[in-house]
Length: 195
Image 1 (spheres, rainbow, N blue to C red):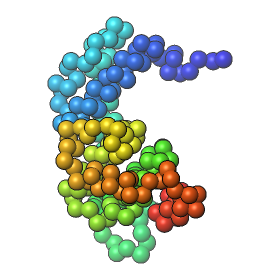
Image 2: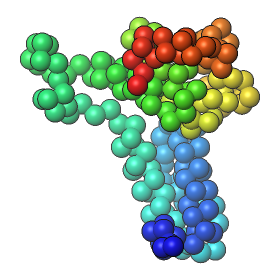
Image 3: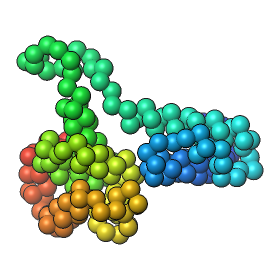
Image 4: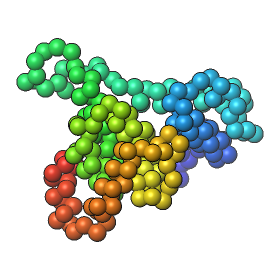
């Protein structure tokens, strides 16, 4: 059996160090919303990586995260609504559609259903501060969102007192998908446009 490419590039200890650093960077980002260069100056110790390698990993992770979170407004003409009047693209609408997509495509069926159906009913009517709160939730790992919404995980400091989180928790408690029938599941998928 051929070894994986990742196995050729890094040992398992190095991969653990990279994942540890990634988690530290994401935590720092989530807590502050802006990463300074000081967030990368004291990474977790790693016996197999040099400080320069760790710094490059941190910089690359930050760049990837920044690119992922940046709202892209350059849209190919083929993706635009042909019935819409010509002119600049509505960045608010792009953001709302992006949040809808990210809600429906989490990778876990339970979270796809929960966030996707909630977002289909609510995202278009949320205020900008509410969208910011909801986006903080979407920026979390899927398993953390699941545990946060079902109450198994305490909210991080950035989400303490979040009205959007409370609304999500109420929604999850009022319509538990785990007890729904197959027909209910199909109806929710059809109604909310889930694939």
